[in-house]
Every structure is written in C-alpha cells, then in structure tokens.
Image 1 (cartoon, rainbow, N blue to C red):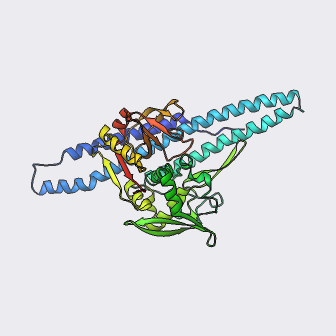
Image 2 (cartoon, rainbow, N blue to C red; image 1 turned 90 degrees about the vertical axis):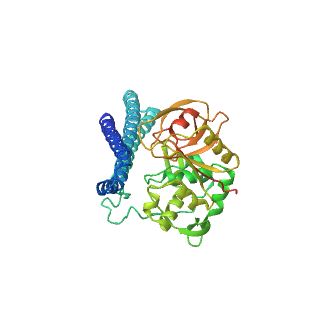
Image 3 (cartoon, helix red, strand yellow; image 1 turned 180 degrees about the vertical axis):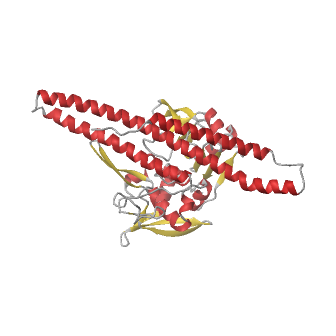
Amino acid sequence: MVSSFGDPAAVEAAAAALHTGAQAAERARNEAARARPDTWTGAAADAYTAAASETLPESLRIADALEGAAGTLRRYAAVQREAQSQYDEAQGDVDRAARALRSNPLDIPAALSVARAELAAFGALGQVQQAASTAADELRAAIGEEGDGRPWWDPFGWFNDPEDPDERVSDNILDDDAFDPDDVAQGSIGDCFMLSSIVSLLDSDEGDEFIRDNVRWDPEKEGYWVTLYSNGEPQEVFVEHVFDNGAKQSDWDWWIFGGDKPSIAALYEAAIRQEYGYDFIDGGVPAEAMEIITGHPVDVIENSNYAGLDPEQVDDLREVLDDGGQVVISSPRSGDHQITVTDADGNSRDVDVVTSHSYVITRIDPDGSVWMRNPWGPGNSADGGGEFRVSPEDVEDLFWRATMTNVTE
C-alpha cells in the first residue's frame, strides 16, 4: 500500500502565513478606523469618510477570509497527522500479521488480522481524502467561491448545483438517535450559526419536544414538513431533498465500518435555503436563524469591542438556561486560541477555539464555568466533540456574544 498524506508541516506553514496576513489586514483596518478626521472638515474630509466607509468593511472581510483559510489549513494538517499515524499503525499490523502468515499459511487469525489492518489503512486514506475535499470547499468559500458538492458520478459538476439540495430524504431521519445533541455534525456549509440553534434545542426536553412538533414526515408525499417562522408566524416548508454536504448524524456501525445520514439539522438547512436562499445559510448571524427556527423573541448580549462576557452577563445566561431556554455563544473573530477544558468524565484536554464560530451553551456552573458543545460534532479536529467545560477566565477572555431565546415562554 502507498501512503498519500501530503506534508502537514507545509500545510501548517501556509496556515501561519495566512494568519500573519489576517493580522496585518486587521491592523491596517484598525489604523484606518482610528485615523478618521473627527475635527477635519471640508471636501477632503468628506471624501476620506466616504472612502473609509467603503474600504473598511472590505478590509475586515479580507481579514476574516484569511483567518478562516488559516483555520481550515490548520484543521486539515491535524487530520493529515492523525491519519498518517493511523496508517502507520495499520501498516505495522499488516507487516506483523503477514510475517505470521508466512510462518504458518493456515493461521486464520493472522489472515483476518491482515484484512482488518488493510481496511484500517485504507480507512485512514479515505479520512484524509475527505478532509482534503472539505478543506477545498472551505477555502473556496473563504475567497467567495462555492464548494463543489459533487457526487462521484458527476466529477465535472454537469448535473449538480452546489446551492441546491440534491440528496433525497428517507423516512429514517426522525429515529430515536436523531435527537442526540452530541450526534449532529456540521458539513461543509458555513452554517454553524444556524446548527448551534438546532443543537441547543435538542439539548433540553422542552427544545426536543419543540423540534418534534415542528418537523414531521409525510408518508404520502415522502418528504418532511418543517415549520419555520416569519415575524413569529408559522409557515410550513416541504423538504424532499437535503444537501449531500450538509449536516449529518451517525446511522450505523459495524466492526470498523460506519455510515451516516442527514440529520434533523439538514432538514432545516434545506427548508431555510428554500425560503431565504443559499447565501443566508452559508454564513450568518445566530439571532436571525434563532428567530426563524423558533418564532420566539431573541435577546442578544454582546460587547462591541469583541471582549469576552463578564460574570454578570454569564449570570444572565444561567437564568435563561435554568428557565429551560436556549443559548448560543460566539467565539473570537480572529487569532489562534488554545485552551484547556474539562470533559464530562472529568478529564482535561487542550482544544482549539474555532474563530468566528458559534457554540452551544448547555449549562453554567455556580463558579461561572460554562459547558458548551461545538456543532462540528463528534470526532472533530478542534475539540473532539461532546460537551466540555470552559473556565470563567477563558469565557471572559474569548467569548464575546451570546444569543438566547426560550421556546417554553
């Protein structure tokens, strides 16, 4: 077998270069913003102000795009390293089992070990190839292009528009496992701001019931009715296709194999795209998505200078959660941030905080520690998935905006 994992060090170097560029663009934008002529008047001052109003938002977009691309490459490099390690381990198992077979051709356990190890090695290759495809889509999105979203039978994209849902739904999306908040995994669409609202609903009994009341299977039409809300008024949207690169959940596991299927969140992706367009779901604001999904009033707490939430603001979020509400929190817009968190089993680990990202707050401890989930889902390269606790100091330092509602009110 031949390995083809690329050079993660080179990918990390490219990520570092993009990060440096993002910081430079951010500094240039801040310098230009501070240079506004508060006391300067006249035609030249008016021209400067007009030019700044056009160019400053663009410089911020450039900084965000560069930082987003840097994050993509860092995650891709991490998958490369992990897959290479898995491949090397599997290759070692192949070699050991092969030696045993050469000594005894009738050693059936050794033959099975060879088969398992070869499948594991090919699985590692598939993992890095999938990561490469996801990284390519994210990089295209960062520079303003859409991802391929192309199935294997359409390599040139002749039959598939990536902005159109193209995977036919089946009647098993609403099975019991569908309501596990730990099992929802974001695809390559940039809709963490929306998925985090879905996961926050699934995290409580009241929110779980709300989803069940607002998504239903139509056996005659073989599709799903999804209830969205416009100005608080319900409107039913029929969904029979979802994005093949959209939100997923686990479907089955057997031995070393596994498969996934569209999640409940994928139904919302398709429904919202149908009503509001693809641009809405591929990058947006949590408050807008939360209003459309729940139809309930939405409150936002944020610090305009992007500093983290203070203890009093965190106390307000605790009250919302204690009342059965849903809360989504926003991460820093730029920069590299690695923090130490604690998982539900009490184990500590270092995780990367994804920039310009939305996380779900699940509970808040008396000391101000915040438990949260990443809608990237299980096994993700930033934090591994699942619920984890962030210290009060890190919350106050990094997480600058919270969006909340309560479907029980």
